[in-house]
Amino acid sequence: MDGGGQGVARRHGAVAEEDPDRRHGDRSGKEGDDDGVDVDEKAPPPRRTSRRVASLDVFRGLTVALMILVDGAGGEWPVIGHAPWNGCNLADFVMPFFLFIVGMAIPLSLKRIPDRGRAVRRVVLRTLKLLFWGILLQGGYSHAPDDLSYGVDMKHVRWCGILQRIALAYLVVAVLEIVTKNAKVQDQSSSGFSIFRMYFSQWIVACCILVIYLSLVYGIYVPDWDFRVSDVKNPNFGKILTVTCGTRGKLSPPCNAVGYIDRKVLGINHMYHRPAWRRHKDCTDDSPHEGPFKTDSPAWCYAPFEPEGLLSSLSAVLSTIIGVHYGHVLVHMKSHTDRLKQWSIMGITLLILGLTLHFSHAIPLNKQLYTFSYICVTAGAAGIVFCMFYFLVDILNLHYPFAPLKWTGMNAMLVYVMAAAGIFEGFLNGWYYEGTNNTLVYWVRKHVFVKVWHSTRVGILLYVLFAQILFWALVAGLLHPCGRDGMWQ
Image (cartoon, one colour):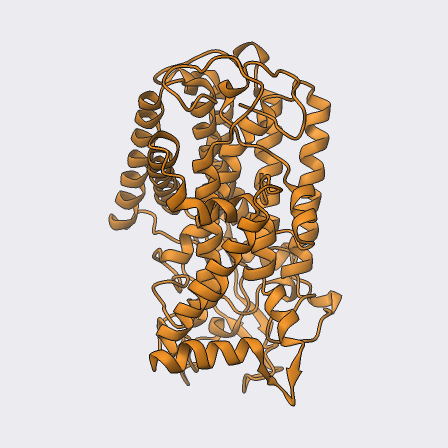
């Protein structure tokens, strides 16, 4: 997510996630290539070159591709889009995958920066860059790709968003890593659960975050609240509707503490105005597709809700902390077998725990609230997916089949801004003939994909896969010699 193309992507994320023991001959610790981890069972001879952990680039590229797929085809394919409330669809794995990747990269990027002051400055600078791009792209200023206008009323700026949440998690966890890491253990090999003991203080912080989150979610009293309908297309536009709550400990759409805190702190005008719950079965007969509201739909269906809000972003930090543990394993363990064993055990354990909490109706899977069961399931899935990529790419050296994903991952900020945020399509749509619906983008989508397959759903899906994901993967491939790490660490 970095808007100025290759140069901006490189300036934002010049971090090399490398295998720590690949740099035995180079201890200069230059900021551009921070770390090094052995991807071989036996350490290679001393050498001046370094090698990235290619599987992490591939995983990042996959996650960016999923985001593009979700944004482009989620409306036609509900299984791809976000779950209306409880549950977990494909789109609901994107955010925690990003946070996991950010966490995993933190120990690698900070390993060769012994000066804490320099490391903190670097973390703060990257956090500010993420906040800037997040507010610019998701705060309401950019209306791309369909609306050719730009600008936002400051009374309605959306302060939270994807990049803002990543920025918060990165700042908290990176500073935690800087404060708690012990220089004496940075180059020691570890096995088993000794890594947990080595970074025990980080897990204490994680437990404190979880306790605070659960205490607020289940302890805060949520009173009745009202709001003014701001959607000009809604027949209730301008009316003030009241939502009845008067309860505590509920995880329902209208009466949860997550939304209550956001309304009080952010203000309802600064929240997301098209939440996924608009597709809830209580709101529309077309659920899980988006459609016209029922005539007797409850008032909360028309209300804003912030899916990247304050309290849910606090619990989202846990996804990044889990990713940091995977990074610690990569730094301290030297054999493929030990690494895969540690990662797999933790991933499967988290997955089972999260599914148990959900299906026992103790804590439902819910991306909007970022519940504990959701953290466990998505972090566990991220760990298992990364294990697969690590085995295929870094052990079996199957680089060529995953090259497009690797290129995307190494230029991820550029691809996110141009494709997922719709900036490139918005630029193309600015060159239209007679009407704004007669542009190159619309023509290609309609005549090359939809009409050929005689299906809007299939045509849009193929358009996103080929004209967006594959196209930008090839562009990223052209930038491959310059790509370092396009996004989020």
